[in-house]
View 1 (tube, one colour):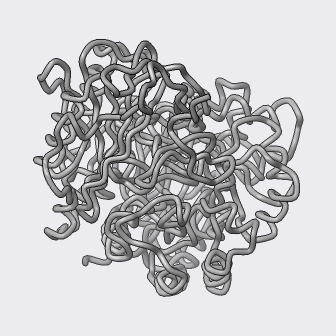
View 2: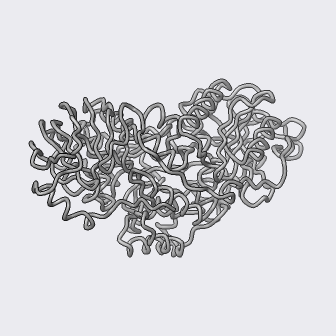
View 3: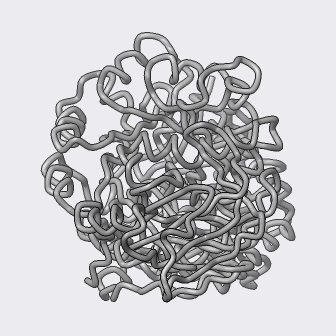
Length: 600
């Protein structure tokens, strides 16, 4: 691994002092800009920034005393000087890109720091996969901090993963140079019930002086929530309404509010700041799950900041939520998050604070993007074969694998059906009367069939159920080896033959997402690394992702970015109903329930 970990402040402190005092020339000076100070929430015109060794040495009305014969001068021309944006919680795997291509995609949008939880790859490749993500992250020209995944499986006893994360794994990872803390603690019942392994993982993180990420996906804000907070998680991004944000902040957590490709949770929670008037320093903006099409074509953290402003947030407060609030939360206030002496020189030049056009990006003192183009190399890790051959199906599937037998003599049945909710991660637990033909239950109308195909241990298991809300029409199927968090294969369709074709196609290509209609493949996003990521350029993957979204629309789906809903149908830690390799999961009770209601 090429280690590009940024030099620490003690390594360059003397140089910074000398430059600030005018006894040594700066490497770069940005002149005549409007200093956006997120510490004081001020915009100060006609300020300069002097940079040395990749860090800020001086900020003031006149940095001419720091100028030397070889100092690079960047003319701000009255534009705003904004701290580089920080994503407080996200999963690189959800972009469908490797860390290198993720960096290449987000740099032009002004993201210079990301706090990433690679629990997707942990479920497929275990600690080795986490190490690969960590190592490629350290090779990048921006700051990609890694959280050690906490929950693989996310709900023990309710799913089977390729690998399991142990407390010993967590303790080992805390010594790695790029590990910033523990990833989202999804097993919230485990924490609330004092599960020894969950508390051991949290203890190992706190002993290392690092931050414990939260994930409390329950509407219960009573004693169970208090017990979860007492267990140690310091933030949470699973809120969907103002009461969720308020409860988290009142209990000393940071409320992370997200705008992903399909998670629109900012508008409903930011009112805790804009209307209720709570202290905004306890709220953080994040993306959580955004695919490559979104981040390439619409933006990354700049998109979230703009959205928060559109929701009525003061631009300076929105910027605090995407810079200094995040840095402070992770104990990095002296490193990133503001344009002040000693910090890494991560700067955005923008001509408007509300619409936030990103016209130039400086990371660690180097110009890394201008006018939407990435100007630096983002090195790739040499991903081994063991990371590329992970679709371990026992055999090709046939239509018979998707049969759902009905009780003998039944003409119709009552089925428990997963209900998709547009623009939100939670699902609904629904019941539908479904017809029976030749002894098999049939999907009909707004109900499609869903299947989970085991792909880690070649068991040949296919779990069948039903899902509502996609609106698919005709003879089609969509399959994906991105299936949070166990990452088996999820197949949704209206026809068993098409479902078999889609599943077998992903076995053939080594993972990804595909959609078939009438025997023809309409779109394919090949994801050969762990069945989760491509190492192709971000623009190419984004084009494939956009084609996939269009193919879903062509098959009748009218949901916004419905691929994200598809990929979360196996996430057995977010209510109300999910599917796993063990059956249909009631996430409110955390138990397996029957697909078909007993006949009366």
